[in-house]
Length: 175
Image (cartoon, rainbow, N blue to C red; front, side, top):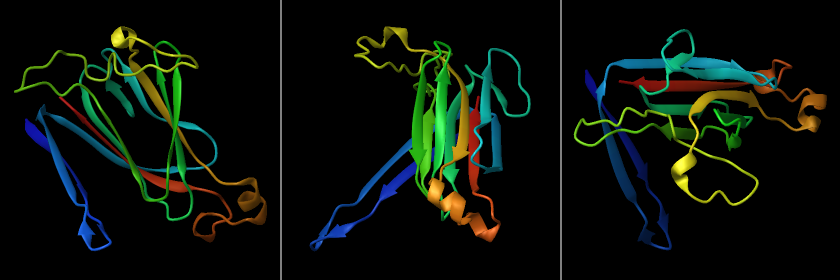
């Protein structure tokens, strides 16, 4: 087993003042890492699926997942993620060029876990949500490359290939 250390550092100097920040978070008892690169087109595709017990290609046990990172490797196009929960709620998030999105499961304190992982981790609604007692379980994440109709019609596509596409790096850590 290993400990995953996630470090976030911001460094900026504005008007001769430093506004630097550093934060880190550790997640212990990690025993499974999945890291892969995926090429996305403008067609929405599943990149992660959750299950209660089954593990497979792109499928993870939801109460074991502790950390998910999606990094857009493209220098040309943003990527859009859709996170879905078991209440059929959806959240869309745009990841700009060369940016990352991090989603964490319950990490525990001093190695003690509630066993929830990405269960009971988000809710979405078109109205006021209210209490956090009814959060849904993350069940899957889909993604696609976003580009304007003008870029597509002009053939202004990733790497001169004639197809709008973006590469992402998907990193998942589980206990």
